[in-house]
Image 1: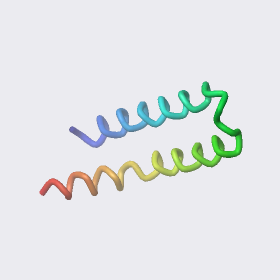
Image 2: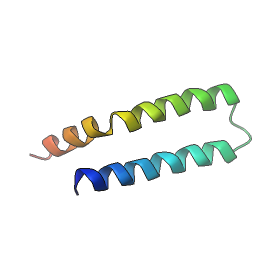
Image 3: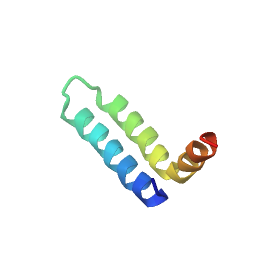
Amino acid sequence: MTKEEFDATFSESLNAILEAMAENAEIDPEKFYSMACVIENLRFFSPVLFGAIRNGKK
């Protein structure tokens, strides 16, 4: 898997999580906002995660 493929797949997965959380009425808006911030940080650090996963397989 290339870095671009990883970024695209990872972003799609994070968007799906956010969408599922947004559609769930049981989730408190404050908790949703907090989780959205965490997910955005995960997306920002996806190149670091890719590198860690790739180096971990060696």
